[in-house]
Length: 135
Ligand SMILES: *[C@@H]1O[C@H](CO)[C@@H](O)[C@H](O)[C@H]1NC(C)=O
Image (cartoon, rainbow, N blue to C red; front, top):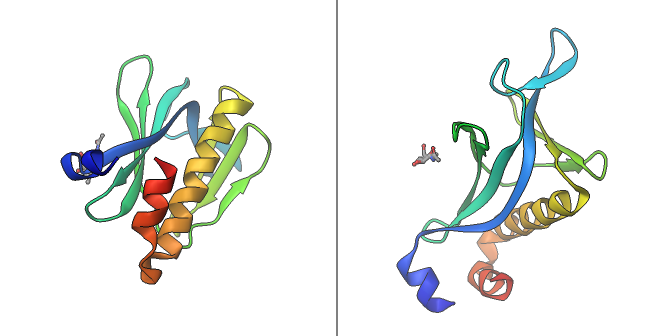
């Protein structure tokens, strides 16, 4: 485990399939994050072990296009609206993930909550212990 942390600075902590949506305030509807592009993406949360930050990256299964590359911010509120639809918001947008299965939603939310836990406790100096426990 220590070896991994030394040799790679970005490490995937989960993988799940979901379609990535944003809430369109004008039409009051959820729409695909890339206009006109429906379908599942492979979503990973990457942990940058050097800076101890986390990023949500989604790549379309169909054409490998990056649809989301989102830095998780400390204090982000992650809402599990249904077992397969989760969402969060920032100052600009509301993001939604429509997962392919409950299991994948659970895998992703566990990793997201783990990331938020680490970020929210960052001043406590315990984060590396948490990371080692998780991997
Ligand atoms: C996501 O953004 C970061 C910083 O802007 C960049 O370094 C990284 O390569 C991007 N990842 C992908 C998959 O586009």
